[in-house]
Image (cartoon, rainbow over all chains, first blue to last red; front, side):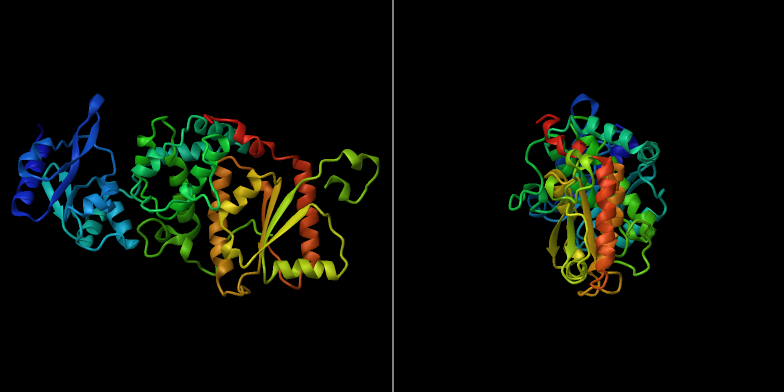
Length: 269
Length: 156
């Protein structure tokens, strides 16, 4: 057990003891050396918490679940993507300021960020891009011809079985009714054939444009190893490139429900 | 369908005739297309016009659905900026298209087949010109088999 881990366990036990939070959402030991989410509700359970470099999942996904909300105020072990999700979810009026206590585990102990101002301040000191590898891959794909890109995606998406794990893992996919399930009209074919998978992933990326926190939790959740995060990160980048950095996730307004008369494009005839 | 195109010599009979779906707004482009007709301007009959209240109402999934259901090309057209009947519907639509077209291209969908334009109620001639041009372009590209045949691929 590392120092970071023992600090985290002590903090979690204290928070639950004093009753300032009802549940601590963190990482625990999973199978095959991976981490899985744990929901610590009693001080004695705090020993289940693990924190190391394998903790990648975006735990903010659980914050909006009714069964978690019902428990009371949560604390969440916050890696940078969780912090970005908190800001974005608050912007979208899904969380109220102070609803969630963020626990940032570092070598100097556990920092408790109780409100959005503290979260924003902490984020300001972190690198802007969470996923530099995705940007490299997007640049590689963008340099291909359209036919090569089509071949790339039809090959990748041919493994998709439409289990919707990407959607379930995403902190921004919190709609109770998703276009995917809408069958009047049936926007997305139910079958996981080439068309159904392409339309599903395009739809999801479009709905994440300007909202994606670029945590890539979607592609880590994919049982077929499809890099689905590239589509969402690309759409997010497209928003920032065309409408300015402030139009992206955690910006003041959702980019696709606002506009500027002087928006510039080069393709409308 | 193929028999309705203006005849252009013996080769015309076997020529591929593209199917083009046009999503247009009620207030500008639909009225513009109406003007094309009342002005007796001829244009190629490959386009199926679908009238919607506003370009802001045109969901990107409509474009996908058209392509998936056999369209070889899609036109999306509405009022010029600042002319929207609902003040800002076309501005919102423009933002959505800017991102959607980018995303389509990134996902390997042929963006040459998805054409966006502004056609006002006074631009009957522009509508005829646009439809003719897009029809010729898509005819040159051929049927959009890459999308039409997609439902036969994958896990199923």
